[in-house]
Length: 132
Image (cartoon, rainbow, N blue to C red):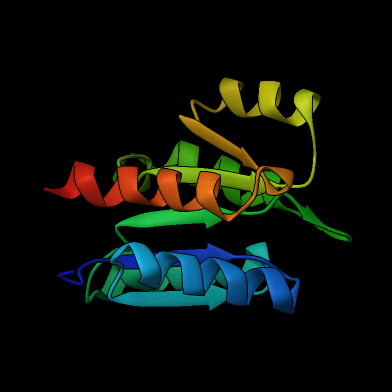
């Protein structure tokens, strides 16, 4: 399988970050950039917007960070036209209410962590397929 693309994974749980990175590579992402907080992800995206080299081809975002909230990064993504073109998947343990909130931000894909690796990989494949 040809590897291509960069996926930004925003996840604070080490095992979930590893799982997401492994799943991304398994479906064909060449690079995975992991950030353990929405703030770190925002700094990464702001730097890429200002200095390059390129924006990620997709973003995988958890919403539950304890003190911080994934919604802050979601707002930043939604309010920036250059970022809004990047496919964003919310991957969270949170449920139906959060899924509905994601609809307000025009998030096209919500994958519950309880749905397993196959659902996550299917969503990640959609990002890669949309790039071709």
